[in-house]
Amino acid sequence: MKFNRRTKTLMLAGLIFLLIATVAAAGLVMDPARYGPDYSAKRLAPSLSHLFGTDYLGRDMFSRTVKGLSTSILIGALAATASACIALVLGLAAAAAGGIADKIIAYFIDLTMGIPHMVLLIIISFLLGKGLQGVILGVALTHWPNLTRIIRGEALQVREAQFVKSARKFGKPRMAVAFEHILPHVLPQFIIGLILLFPHAILHEAGITFLGYGLSVDAPAIGIILSESMKHIAAGLWWLVVFPGAALVAVVMLFDKLGEQAKLLIDPVSAQE
Image (cartoon, rainbow, N blue to C red):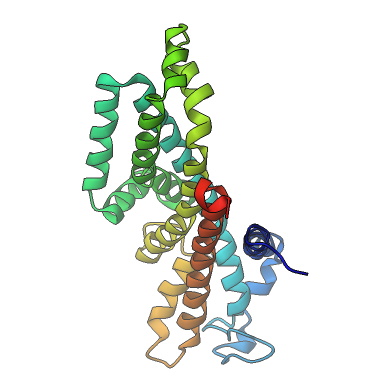
């Protein structure tokens, strides 16, 4: 049976989504005992019984990695969704209101993008007390500018369309025009941008946690795992860094590939091929 390009793209996107969802769900339902200490199995190299080996406390690194990836995916989902919604609201508001409101939003976009990303993220997370809340809000409040700029640009183009001008002439309020006529045309950019925000959110969550400004040290997060593992590389425990790091990169690449497939399906040009 031959499949056309659209069907193949849908199947690949569905497979990627299933893999990511499986990792996230596996971490949620996992018994804490599976990634807890076992002092009789300390510093074991990778084997069939411990695929990623064990650490200095005898914790199974495969289970810890799955749990850490699940935590990162869930945090990334919450933070990326919040950030994308901020971008959508600001982008629509800039196009609908115009004038001073548009200039103010454009100014804040430039201001936020002018500050080093990781520095701003660490400051926000630290001021909010670090932990889960600090990480989610920190990522959400720092990842909206690029998507806002894209949505704003697209919305400004749609605003000049004849059907939008006609709606205004008939006396429709600006926000009604924005949500009824402009919003449907910027949803593809919003969806693609939301998916592509996921890998950035996951990497930055792992980054600030690695630096000590994110999740608490007792959390089985990838950043914590990598931070602890750095102390044991000299002892030859290479698997403590290699496998969790490779798994993090793999998840990020999966999200990136999912964004590419979503773009192929949603983009008007490629969707017709």
